[in-house]
Length: 139
Image (cartoon, rainbow, N blue to C red; front, side):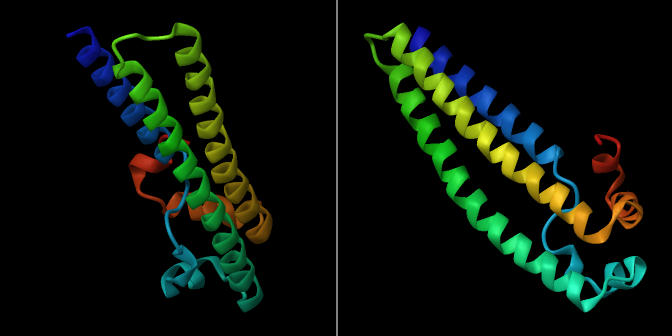
């Protein structure tokens, strides 16, 4: 029963962390493909190309980093479910998981900052204003 409680606690913590990380993201997806957004922000073809290149590079990194998070989560879950738990090993694995999550969050933030550099602070503010209200209030 203790093992089941630990497993459920781990699942809940993981879901909460994922929801928090997603809430920190600004615009989702390739918003610069929307003609309405392009017109409102007056994006140039060069800026659109920069955004596309940055997105692709960042997306590849995030795919790799998300995979690392899932791997570390699986390792921790497996350790917690064992009958003979090694507290030191579990704590070390938890640190590995948090490091992987931190690297993923850093990459998300780096892309966020890069977008701001490409389009400038004024248009970036306008872009954030276009985001759904729930996302805007969490900024």
